[in-house]
Image 1 (cartoon, rainbow, N blue to C red):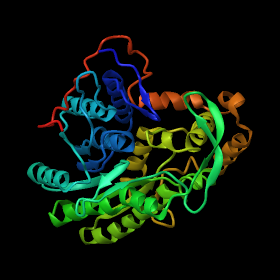
Image 2 (image 1 turned 90 degrees about the vertical axis):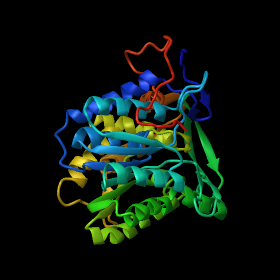
Image 3 (image 1 turned 135 degrees about the vertical axis):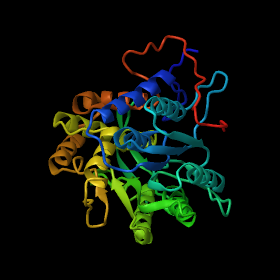
Length: 398
């Protein structure tokens, strides 16, 4: 079939298999051009199919030569419906790993569930014995609690009081003012349950109880802080409250893993175009201006560059540099005073008439479409393509 982008709100409901494969191939090529990493050899990535999770798996495999198991929840193609981008990403990753002789298996299902946790533990026990690194990069709007059965739904809202600021429709380029009502206490509780640290700890507890964490094992999860400009809707809002819980969990896990000489970290990463960030009012406008400034100064990074720097310059380069709260700061370039001052100046001036002049909205749109395999040079998007693509290691395709 011929695959074109189709939208439902801020989500693209189609994905192009060739474009997704090209995205993965380009990330792999970047990593292979960097110095080899003396790092982990058996890596579990929970949330492995897109964004920072995908990049973490690529760096582990093609940068450190690691065997990897990925856990994700993606949909295969059915009839005239394409698979999700994450499905195609995992298929492309496994294809490339096989060509390099690297172990790569993927478990597709609800990572919050006890069933998928047990399947993963069984696979590690069967194939590896123990794991060196556990990356927790799960992004989901909903979670069913594996013990109580309660369904939680996260929201993106400020806490305490309404918030008003500029935002942009990145499809049309229209800049407008948006006011977001504050979250209720119940909405905050739900968001923490989905995006906080409880599930991460459940994974580490299960691995440790089964004696599947190797001596010196590391686990890491990802967070974001951002500038004061976005704090009301992000860091001080429902997502930020959940991230505070995630960071508190990291400190708890770090103490817990001391008996293995292990460690747990939060990496605070830079702002990037993701499916979730595109849905947060204010944030796309900030990112589009941030990208313009960082590209001008030669400091711009995507997911793969960030994860390469995390592994090569932080996690596996001797003593890990952290801030006063024990966090790794990969947002250090984004948060430079000169960068933030420049963005703030643009923010005060920006409106619909000058959005293209003052921002990199074109680059933002391109990054967004590429999440789903579109807008890659060299691909004929008017050509028929088979959307039925297998992930080689999957025994069943849930």
